[in-house]
Image 1 (tube, helix red, strand yellow):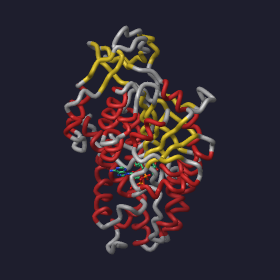
Image 2 (spheres, rainbow, N blue to C red; image 1 turned 90 degrees about the horizontal axis):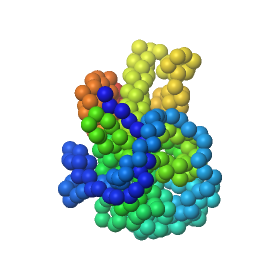
Image 3 (tube, rainbow, N blue to C red; image 1 turned 180 degrees about the horizontal axis):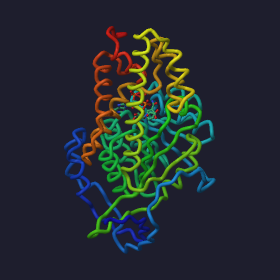
Image 4 (cartoon, rainbow, N blue to C red; image 1 turned 180 degrees about the vertical axis):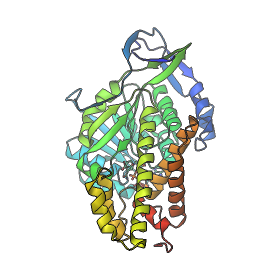
Length: 372
Ligand SMILES: NC(=O)C1=CN([C@@H]2O[C@H](COP(=O)(O)OP(=O)(O)OC[C@H]3O[C@@H](n4cnc5c(N)ncnc54)[C@H](OP(=O)(O)O)[C@@H]3O)[C@@H](O)[C@H]2O)C=CC1
Ligand SMILES: O=CC(=O)O
């Protein structure tokens, strides 16, 4: 039997841990030069076990009223821009960076500072957020040349809110913590509108594990979660702390695996309704009144019927999440046949040039004539 504890280390002797680097070796996007580096440091003695049982729970309480003085934001796409905007509007001192510099301009007009690299943002801020497209870009921005890690040091924190796989999150965690800084993974549930409205749901985790015989010990504390809490509360409506790094990423992938399958199934219902001569608008109405009602169907159904897919959540990201969720299921030999079938539909949609449309464009993969 394995048990989990929160461990509060009271001393800071550091130990390089290569096991995590090895665990990342099956991650094809991880650059070779990072695979062999010792990537993780953590306090080793004395391990003063506080023995507080590990738990996951939603929280709405703020741990502190104080906002971190300087906040960095890397990645200003559909999600990153409104999230950073909400921080600026709430009075935070925000410094931004984006690969395509022009996306920084609207935020600079709102009062944000600009630095020309992730390293310089991290070096000039107390807490730096990253909202990148996928595992490859999250690794590039954190660990690449002039990446955020080069600007991190003791007393700083890095919060990765991108949707990535468990191995990527652990890899970035290891490199950030090796600088003496703190790491929190905090992917979000909620799309463009919830990001604009400050209504996101954060799925966070920041500890790391170590096994002694049959005892599974969690190392680290929740301090970055507590420091970042007021910022998360500006951008979101709720936050969950799920313990060990990887559980936030995994929860997000499970949620999006369900969402991707739901959208594929809804798409089949809409095209079948139309084909048999029923009005798909009525289907949307019927669904909205019953037990399978979901905001997503009511929100996206009417535009799907008109073959319109204004992008809130790009289809390429939904397919990425299906792929990563299937990998997660594979890692524990769990059968997920519905998600696997849905993933095929997203792949077909991508092959027809629908990657940058909203993920509801997956319905086009079911039509004899594709929109594009
Ligand atoms: N949109 C949504 O509804 C939601 C998205 N998510 C997740 O949030 C993350 C961001 O999504 P979203 O904002 O929609 O995506 P976008 O595609 O709009 O933005 C992606 C961001 O990543 C940057 N980027 C991509 N590749 C690289 C790279 N190689 N190096 C540096 N920067 C790079 C882009 O920079 P550039 O501008 O230069 O291209 C951009 O800032 C994804 O992981 C997604 O799965 C989570 C919840 C909801
Ligand atoms: O990841 C997408 C979302 O809507 O959540």
